[in-house]
Image 1 (tube, rainbow, N blue to C red):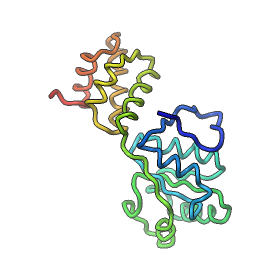
Image 2: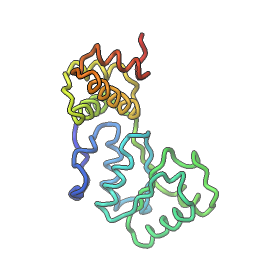
Image 3: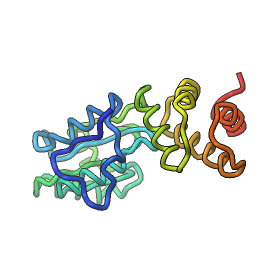
Image 4: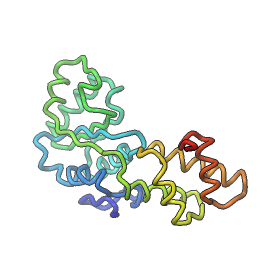
Length: 202
């Protein structure tokens, strides 16, 4: 498992280990590394909630001097249209982050719709097994919790393969450990995550 490697140094105000590179996001990393080769200086980046899409967007914009347009499905269409045109005029890249590609989010402005149709798309995928384990271990460790390796294996075999489920599980285990003044164990994790609805009791 590697950290994402983009051409320039990380900005000083961002952690350099925030984004873990895996099969789920490697295509995104490669695409952003070669932004100068894009057919137009814009890309639509999609991915599940909590997948790090906004983080990588901020890092990319800081590295390249480009612009991030986050939550594009809720953005003002005229503003996005002008941002796309500005990217073309200045050759500074525009990264458009959304839950899904258009036409999954409706676009009323025809000129914007035509530009987005011509815009490359790249997607962060749901977490693979390696990324799931890495995110669980890192997230729990950052909460100051001792994480026995068998616990990570147990969790990764039972929770939903989604970034939201990973965050929900980490939050629930952190609260349980604090409230019960107890180190993390598989029995504690089982009880906690069943109560939180993260796993079922079967």
